[in-house]
Length: 353
Image (tube, rainbow, N blue to C red; front, side):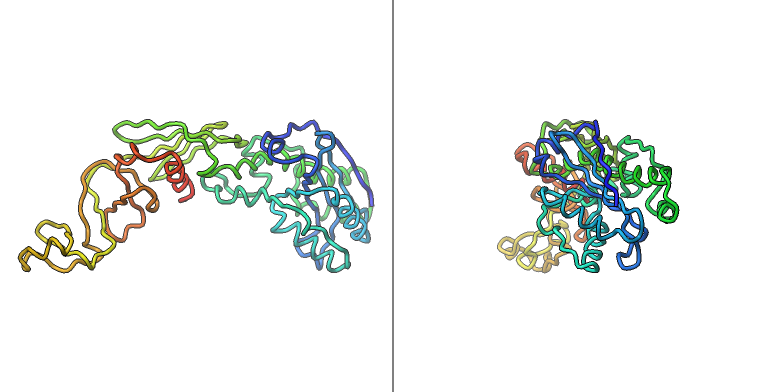
C-alpha cells in the first residue's frame, strides 16, 4: 500500500466554513473494480480534510490485489479523529461497499460514529428545477463550471487498474490517482450545495413582491448562494436564480372559480342559481327549487383574480372543478398574508415538479 498526500488552494465555500467546524470534516470517495464488494477489488480510498483551514488530500492506494485490508485499516485509523463525513452518493454505493468489505475481512468499521451529509441526496429533489440531465457528480460539476483534467469515469479505470496491478507504471498510477483526486476536489467545490439545507420556507429570506395585469413576481434571497444560476419554466410558474437572489413569477388567473364546501351533507344545491346554500336557509325555499347537494356541486362562485397553488396553503381555496388537484387563492389574500406563509406557498411551487 502507498499513501499519497497533497494540499489544495481551492477556496472553501462559505456555507461549509460558517456552518461546520472544518477540522471535524472528512470528505471521502472510493475507487473499485466493480459494484459488488463480494466479487470486485477495492483499490483506492481518498480523503479530503482540513489542516489549519487548508484543504488537504490523503489517498490510500492498493498496489496489488492483496492490499485491501491495509487500505481499509489505514482509512479507519485516519478517520477516527473526524466527526462529520461528507460524500457524494456515499449512502448509495461507497458506504455499503466498504461495509461489505469490512464484514468479509472482519474489520471493525466506524461509520456509526459519524454525522453524515450526502451531497447527492441534497440535490436530488431539485434535479428538474435546476435543469440537470442527470445527477452524476461530473454533470453537476460541469453545470457549476467546474472543469477537470481527468477524462475517465470509474468504469473506464477498471482495466487501467488491472494493467497497473500486473505491470506498475507511473503513467497509469497518475491516471488512477488523478480521477480520485479530482472527485475529492470537485466534492469540496460542490459542497456549496450544502446551502440546500437552507433552501426551504423556514430559512429563505422573503424580500418583496410586485405585479402587473398578467402575473405576480416574488423576490427572495438565499442565506447562502448556490454554486450556479438556474432558470425554470412550466405552465404554473417560472423561476430565475442568480447568486443569492431568487425570483418566482406566477401567472394571474382572471375569471370565475368555485369554492367547494367540505360538509356538503348540510347543504342544498340550487340548479337555477348554480350554487349551494346551507340547509338552515334552504329549508324555507320551494322544494322543487332545491336538491340535496353532492360533493361535486356543493359550491359557491367567486369572480376575480387568482394565483394557483398545488394544494391548499392560502385559504379559502378555489377550484375550477371538484376533482381538480391544483387550486387557487384570491389575490386579495396577499394583502393580509404573513411572509412565513408566503414562503411556504412559494416552496410548494418549487417542489411541485
